[in-house]
Image 1: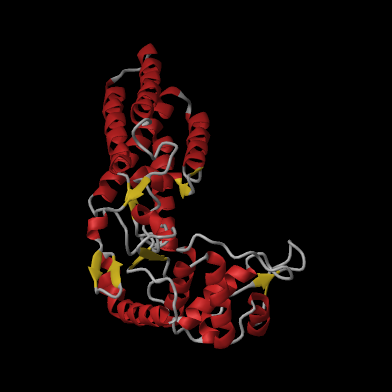
Image 2 (image 1 turned 180 degrees about the vertical axis):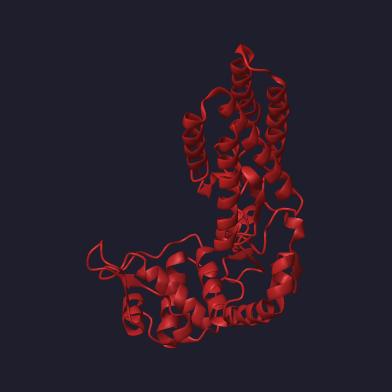
Length: 343
């Protein structure tokens, strides 16, 4: 029993430690500080319970490999694009990219690890009280039945079990300032990046209005609850901005948001990548919003063969592919795009 418990619990702790050292916790969009240790404790108790059950029924020479196999299968199994171990802890990937601050773990998904761990821990105490004999196998079967019962009970209501475990963040948390435009940021974004983002976006907005671009009255990072920000007629420009980036990066993201807020799609170029014309329109909009030409130029790559490493196009080649070399061509490109959109 002891080797099984040690292999499960120690192995899990090592994997968690390595994951945190490699990826770290996200700076934004994290669950509360208390739910993480509680969920971790629930998982640890569950691992002890399963390990004890294996050690109670199987000889160590069999139980240890089985426990190791279960741990390996449990941790890396992908579910909805997130490592299953982290999904069990908080309902989302703790090491997810800091850009996705518009979603939070589902509350029920946070609690399932605690509930299941507590139930399995209670059964572990019962197993400790069981003396050697036939009842030990019966108790082990009880552990398995309890696990299945927990899954069946929570499956219909907990998105962590087979569906997306994240829910849109409460939009009332957005902090909005200004009128032309209204710039809305999450509190943690606003505190760190607000002073740098708001002036750039505001100036770009006025440039866009002067250039006749379809600027929206509000600007916000893309949020799940505002998916209509990407649709024609919405009052919101949903900007997928990389916070902390340069002004050119913000303006490039803003240009993309202005482009995607319209319902039309520019056809791909005949002699270049299918997305070349779309990239050209987005780049042209960014230039009209005040972005520096070279800084806002999109990165494009090509590969002679699929198995070879992609080679980046030079800036001049990128400009040839997207068809925009200067501000004059940018205005022409945007005007043609607006005409094709019926704006």
